[in-house]
Structure formats: C-alpha cells, structure tokens
Amino acid sequence: MIEVSDVTRIYQMGLVEVRALQGVNCRIESGEFVGIMGPSGSGKSTLLHILGLLDEPTAGTVTIDGIPVGTLSEEEKSDFRLNRLGYVFQDYALVPELSVQENVVLPAMARGISPNEYLRESEKILHEVGLGHRIHHRQYELSGGEQQRVAIARALINRPSILFADEPCANLDSNTSRTILNLFRDLNEKFGQTIIMVTHEDWHEEYMCRVLYMKDGLIEDEKACKMRRRDGVSESISDYL
Image (cartoon, rainbow, N blue to C red; front, top):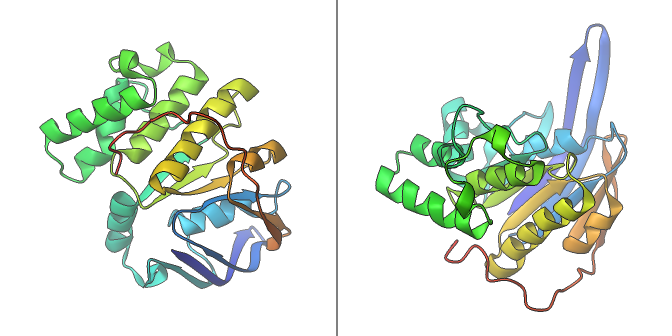
C-alpha cells in the first residue's frame, strides 16, 4: 500500500540545518498494523507526517496505492487526505465549542455527504466506540480516554484506507491506553484496517503486526510482532466496511 524510497527531510533552523530523515526506505502492506518506535528526535513523527501528507520530503518519493503523492497538486493532496486517510493525534484536536457528534461529522461534511447519512453513520460509530451516551456532550465533559475515542470516531467517519495515529496514548493511563489499543486491534484484525502508529512504549508491540525502529533519521531495524490474541474479541465497529 505504501512504498517509501530514499526519503529525506531537512529543516532549516536559522543557520542550522537539521536532518530529521536521512534516506528512509520501507514498505507497508495493506492490512498491516505497523508501529514506528525510537528515541525522541529519531524522526518518528516526521516520517508519519510525510506518509500522511501533512509534510513534504526534501527529497525521495512516497507512493500510496500506486500514486506518487509528491506529484499531486495541493488541491489533489487535500482531496487525497480527506477521502483516503484518517488521523488521530495525542492532543485529540477536538473543537471544544462543538458536541461530540458535531466533531465526528466534520470530515463527512467536508466531503459533501448528506446530513441524514453522516448523522446516521456518526451515531453508529459513536455507539461502537462506547460513546453512544455522550453524543451531545462537549469536550470539557469527557475524560481523556473518551476524548481520544471521539478523535478515533472522527478519523473513521470517512472509512479511510489508512489510519495514522501519532502517540495516541501519550496522555492516557495504562488501562485507558489498552482500551484505545484494543479498539485499534479490533479494527485491524476484523476489518483489515491499515494502521500506522507512532509510539514510545515498548509494551504496545503486543498489539501490532510489525514495528519499525528509528534512530538518527533512519530505520535502524524492524521486527514482526507476536500479537497477543484475546478470547471473545468484541464485535465492535460493526458494518464499518
């Protein structure tokens, strides 16, 4: 699904040149749950942002579904992000003035989906992520884990081909983190959702198919993970696809 070829990213900080990525190469297949790990400053988030078309490489190419995305115009990239990609961030990025449901439907509204359809879909997804009773609440009325589940529901409303998550559990305790990771794993195992997630927690590996380890702007190593299977995996996100 994704092929990265010799990607570099250089930032100019005054007179100093910061080489965040130094020639990254990797492939990510459809249906994988891939983790990106490494120490602070290793290039994890920079790589994720480039894969998600939130940043551009200084050099090299990124191909998604056979499309060299660097050749797209800004308008085409915007459409690509809206129609094919979903994003979950560590700070939730919710609009505090809007209700839970209003936050979730924003991407669907941007696509021009009819109100009847996006209201129906948002209610379904919110019930599936355990927030059916919170539809009309505001951000300040939610716990951190609930806010992150709203962000996940919003990312799923347009049924993205790829879900990107940038340290989605960074502000959560371990029990709440497991709730979020179980939700990701259900999406991946039951519906083949491709997920790429940046994390710094080694124990998150048990939820993933494969991990890319970064250091000094390069992928230093990678390994397949032996995911811990659970008995009676919930039938969550029914009819997601």
